Amino acid sequence: MKNPKSPNSPVLRGRMFFTFLALLSFLAFTGFYKIQNSPDTADSRKLHYYNVSDFAKVPKIDLHFHYNTPDTKYLLFADSLNFRLISPNVDTEIPIDKQLSICRKIKQQYPAKFAFFGTFSVDGFGSPEFEAATIDRIDLCMKSGACGIKIWKNMGMSLLDREGHYVMVDNPGFGKVFEYMEKQKIQLIAHLGEPKNCWLPLDQMTAANDKRYYANHPQYHMYLHPEAPSYEDQINARNNLLTGHPSLAYIGAHLASEEWNIDELAKSFDRFPNLRADMAARISHLLYQSSKDREKVRNFLIKYQDRILYGTDFSVNEKDTSYKDVSEGMKRTWLNQWIYLATDSIMAFREMPDTQLKGLQLPREVIDKIYCRNAEDFFKSWLIKL
Ligand SMILES: [Zn+2]
View 1: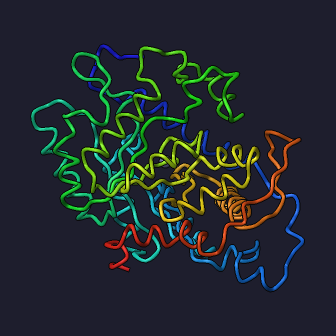
View 2 (view 1 turned 60 degrees about the horizontal axis):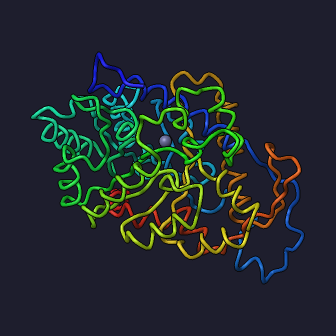
């Protein structure tokens, strides 16, 4: 797992994980579909709930959409469905300066439809100038129009110090960086760790897509790599960061890596008032839990309606050749997830053909918050520029 030749380099495993992330996202998106509309369309219900036909009318934000091409046709397609996009830059194989340049230009062109998180490289971690250089980089991102900064799971899963130890997000070597972000009120989105399934044996994994992926890619299956930090190590490091920086505006990407159990995520929300979470690429885990207990998942989303933000983890790239396929994939994903969250249509899983479940039919005001208002509140500084 470790690369003794370049102990400070997160690059190799970072790249592999990026590919992994993209695949997982794709599988999560395509795993379910509607088979039956809600039969009840009484007027009184219309006041409280949205239906399928409201999808394109309601203003929405996909908070976690990797926009890695200067071609704005996907943004305009999103706009046609009333989606604004927020693109997190990631410290991975596409050079971060290139990502920043693409996003800066799109933001200048479409300031009301698009926003982005900048990011920084951890390559120089441990050098005397690392923290000052990282703060300069954060300033550059913010001056370029970023609405915040993204950090990634290379902290905790691939970055090694000079002695070959894994570097977690609560490492004192990042202290000044997070202190600066907290003081300057710079929003942070953090993808730390992985789904808990990554640390479980295959036969205990809850999501079929996780199971299939780790069976085919044992090098990323942390259960087989006990020398790497545990799932609990990842969550503890995140908790230490939040404890040490109680006013840091923080979004835990991917249901804050507590996708496997909404009770755990609820405890984290209660413990850390500054924690929010996006749903990106983890709706399959909500589906799994609602197939066991729909009301519990529904009540959780209603209770924490101010803390959860909609996102998909979709990515569009320069190498994408078929606009039709990509845009249809975007629409299919967005629409299926809308049907699950906003309506009580009956859904089916491709992965579990015998399982059917009813959409959550969250109240309109909850849908409006998760899809739009929470992000608007979080990114007040971005919205001023609209
Ligand atoms: Zn992502």
